[in-house]
Image (spheres, rainbow, N blue to C red):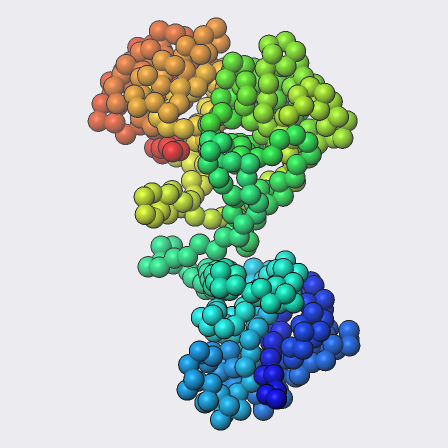
Length: 510
């Protein structure tokens, strides 16, 4: 009677969740376990027989563990093709043990970002096993242990499962190598790039209910989206996440309490206040009609007083808010808001942490990478007054607030900021015509125009927008400047006795 061939599994993992139970399943199935370092110690501690890897390689683990698994015996045991008779014969002649299962996951490089934490042997084993997936199972995720253990027990391992595991294995080492690449890279725009992203969560749907979507984040970059926690209400769609992100981009510019109402990835109201409830009241007041069905994002935790602002919006103008996101929320505020709108999503994201990163714009077949729009406050030093009359101290304060606001409004845009309060009164955004954007902003601000601040995210190519502003009582104008017809706009402002500042810097946001 022919003796059943011996089967071997190689276990070497950083993440040891579930490894003992999985190893017990393998042992019960008669599969011999080869293991290394800490994994071997964990298995031995739980009385699971282990073959030290040095017994297979014939060499000790050396150089503080830098050399353990890389060897002819190990890689051959993984790589030889069981369907080629010559390979099988050679393996026997060379005393190669057939390693049919490789269980390996890598140290999360993003936690320490150190050369000493670059794994060499692990990726080599994973890559070899994934290449030979037709004969070798490669397992990199502890969440798969139960499923794979059950399939091994039932002898129901399929080619489809093998290929799925191989694909995930290559993704695992690709992410790992991408993180290391970014650690070493010092070029602004390297010749080749990879994006190390890990799935954070599945989303309710994409831009429309018939589209599927998932959120992926950089594991090594600080982001408030990593801390998104649902306190109540609806799950997030792509639009919700995009709106929350756009809102965070606005409120993170301010240390004082700030609130923004977002609709379709663009603000319809931004305001500051001495308290978060005051900022929220002003942000909604900017455009109550557009705030309906919007997303509110705050840079301070929400209390019951702030929650009642949303309740007042619902009761007085029948205005619903779809999503509320803030660093934190009082439990009494949660209970109150649950009674205001049962399916409103309430989310917290802890602190607005932010890591410097490149900005990405997706295009067909690829992407465009650019640096972030930084140094907004520093740019104030290069502003110059181009009109005969200079802005007052109060106007200058409002202009600085307006310029911060407009950096987060979709281009082309013109906004109107209140002459005294740190809040938007009118927004003309996403227009193809500068004068159209100005008309929309002026019409929306209506009764708050006298003495207010008008800001444009670029220059005025003609004097028409300045004349419109003068006719409606605007108190001061801030724009980029740089048009070949700047003198026309300057002349129109001088004739209307309106101070105008050129920033010398554009504020486009697409």
